[in-house]
Image (cartoon, rainbow, N blue to C red):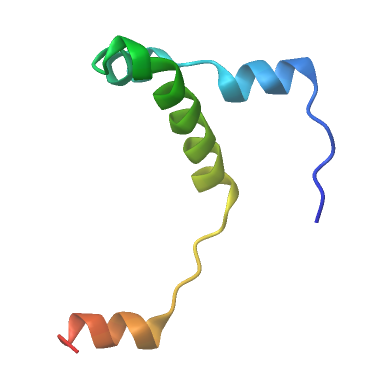
Length: 66
């Protein structure tokens, strides 16, 4: 399923580094900050955009130590 193109407001909303994320980005080495920030924003969007699918049988097996 293809997503419609994002508007400027949506791009700003999704790709702006938030105040609570600045500490994470600034803790990285200078040469890796941009890549880390891009990955952080990408996976933050991916995680909030994908539904969590529970797999009760697999989860029960893991909890039982199997």
